[in-house]
Image (cartoon, rainbow, N blue to C red; front, side):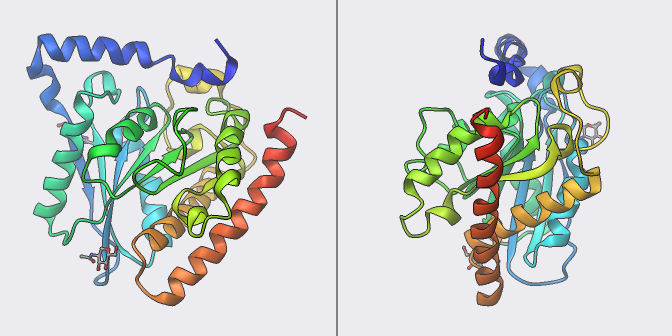
Length: 280
Ligand SMILES: *[C@@H]1O[C@H](CO)[C@@H](O)[C@H](O)[C@H]1NC(C)=O
Ligand SMILES: *[C@@H]1O[C@H](CO)[C@@H](O)[C@H](O)[C@H]1NC(C)=O
């Protein structure tokens, strides 16, 4: 097995969960969501529905989610899905978790259907498969990526691939493959905003969330060069730009600023992919 594919050894855990859920469905009814209401009193609404990485609780993404809310000019709702069997997202429970999140968001007062899925690590593997036919209008992959043979152009909804330079699991060498896919279509109008691939300097795999990380993360991750708060601020800014462009609001000026920022970030990421991504 290639080094860069190590993050997803928890796939085995996931097949155990699937087997377990099929034989004992009652075990799989525990998935739930924690709703974080918007911090802005009014305006255009959207929601970010988080899917955790393997062996991680939904709550591990609260700080990340709040950073996105602070950065965004949208009236952004958040649902942190969690309580998957073994705290590990899997293809059987993920649809239940997203449906539950949507129902709870609506119950809490969210208007409209501007739903975005945001997943970390292994969660992204299942989210990207699920979101091809779902109510989600866009997805964000944190320290995660689409399958190698999936083209960005043909993926049915907008997808942001957001990576850390010092991610020891979703390694920059693997994300460089996604970046190459982006460069192939970068001249197509809108492609850079629809499927941005961005790398953040000094950020590790653990810093997409917060709190204690499972042993597979601590074993393979690299020491970060930014603080957790700095990492969350960067994530907040990048995800906010993507949501602003995807939902085309709240103002034309905000959309234009987000587009400029995404273009700049893609160019800036190229420097790191060149140095580290090709192993030079
Ligand atoms: C998980 O379940 C516990 C116990 O019911 C609950 O307190 C917590 O909010 C749930 N977490 C999420 C992310 O849904
Ligand atoms: C959802 O996003 C669309 C643009 O995609 C926007 O026009 C609309 O106002 C948003 N919905 C709500 C309820 O704010």
